[in-house]
Picture 1 (cartoon, rainbow over the protein chains, first blue to last red):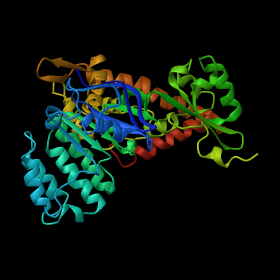
Picture 2 (cartoon, rainbow over the protein chains, first blue to last red):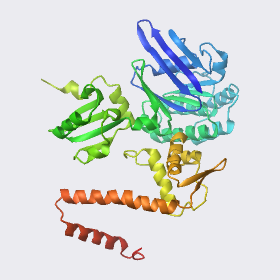
Picture 3 (cartoon, rainbow over the protein chains, first blue to last red):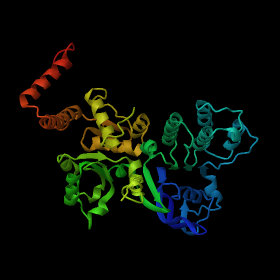
Picture 4 (cartoon, chains in turn brown, blue):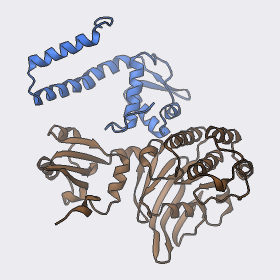
Length: 308
Length: 131
């Protein structure tokens, strides 16, 4: 059953359409990665799902209800983001104690265990924390609250690499023990992808694609090698009205050499057959794939430096 | 445990291969219970859906069987099946790659066979002899 459903959802801030005609659905008890470039609309979407913002147009249902200004949704949702506010004079210990009373599924032993593991100082004030410690503390709350709907907007900002890895693993372990619907927005897809079931990729306020990470791994393939060999291959094996529609990326990286990324569905033959023609076939990291799919040009930053 | 993230093989295939290796080495014996999708998810820090797909690969090929409510168990013929499959597919492909690379480098058949013989000797040297 879908837990969250958006239909032709739009959010406008004056002239700017942060979210535009977005339709999507998210299944219950899955972990979804909300991915997109800066300004793609990730935070706006999460704020609408959390009920903090009212959609300008379209329909949004969470647990079959409109989330805006809705107590049921608010009571079943935690939204971890960098604008979470806590009383200034409270120590972390105080906050942890108080926050527990807000969430019926709160797990104190997980909360305390993670708090101690990450060596947070119980007597420190929230406002004095470093960026990384603040994120860590909020992530602890996000996990321990065990909310049916757990939203995290770039939860790893400022965390060092060791803490990030521990956080992913802690989230996954607690999710397995106590399944819930999790949406994480992040720019670090490479680190995160293994714990995700689905990916929702936003581009300029609209949905670029939504699929399981398993399917997405097979969405595209990269070819590298002799430019002529690759051009011939593209002419011969690409389906579609024009070969260009199957090409996501094209880079000339050395003299006479080419690197192209092609949509697997546009490829008329299996990659095993292409491998024999002395062209290197490579998998595309999801992180790179998302960048290619949302890039303005097929040549990337190098296009800026091309002269003449 | 960490997988090769740059491998062309999807993680669920790597999971299936890891389980195959466990069966092959006897770590997972005949009729023994295989790890659940949740155990695998925790072991490798992957989404349970990915782990389930790896398990299903094994189930589809009959290497494991389901007992309702109890989980998956290693089939009687699993070890034999894996052995044959690996010989034909994995080792077969490695040999093809080896021959192709030798050809690119202009290594003649005699020299290639000599290299393989030497490699065998190096590997088995001081060990428990040929197996």
